[in-house]
Length: 420
Image 1: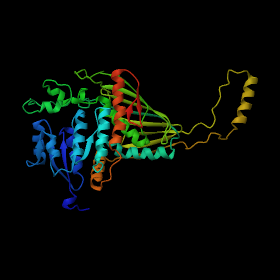
Image 2 (image 1 turned 45 degrees about the vertical axis):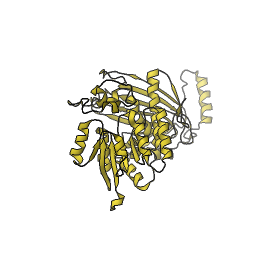
Image 3 (image 1 turned 30 degrees about the vertical axis):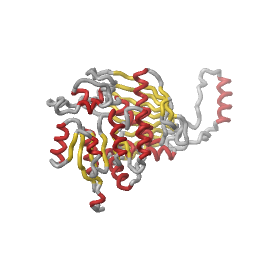
Image 4 (image 1 turned 90 degrees about the vertical axis):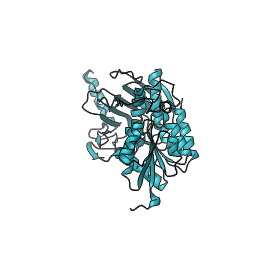
């Protein structure tokens, strides 16, 4: 399709770090998208924007200058987590469509503020940037679960392990970092005031003041994938444990975390337990990601690149343990047993037959997710990963942090999206 000039979607970036730049590259893969500007608090990142996209590209330290421009249709918010809510709300109120990186917010209260701003500006598209919502693997799993391919779901296990310094957020600190070329106060914003310390900016995920720890960075992906596959509204109880096991570098958040979440029975799924694991020193050769959905008659596994269905139907009869009974009692038991379970008969109906199937889901979920945003902006038909979906995924993840730091089980109301 050929797009006319008025079909162009002009995007700008707020937060020009690695994630934000990647989002821009993915956005520009879509026809009719134009990149017009960026805001960041570190001057060198703005210089790099001009190096890549041209000297005429608009850049600023103040994101509000981006929002005031009439040549900006949509913004990508890829700042540290503690700035997501304020910037997203300001962008919506300025009439911009918004792609906000995950987690949508740093706190549950902020989530409700973003939901309110999105409802107030209902003509604007708001989408959360957690790509598993657009992953083909989870769409396939959703169809398998709906078909009853593994019987009744009872357990889901997930893991996202890493074994590199960069995977553990040990990002590079530029040698020229100073108050001269960094707007420190704009970075701190409403967080506790601190003197200039560049490590807290360039490795902000390591600190509670600015990030959301393992749970907000990675658990939220796992919850997003689960909710996409099961169409769940959310859990009822959350518990997490872990610690700083390897990266003892001054961070105040865990590098290893295990979460257990209980999902109640709903119209869309039975009651089940969801287990999540992240380990930043996994001793594996590369990042490991996976899901295992366990049902009464089989399992579904995925590594995002493929989906495997393994069927193991329920046993047709329970068997017996009578070897310690006297011979007469053994004979009596077998006679009684065969009345209830006639030989070669199936009285326990199975939904599947034993076997294994595999599907390749090889598309790039990041690119697909950004394409979904661009399509929503163009058609004005929002993607389902809206503000409510964003908080439904972020809320349980954020409560995993609360559980970890406060050493308690947390409750969640999936209807009101509030902690119990």
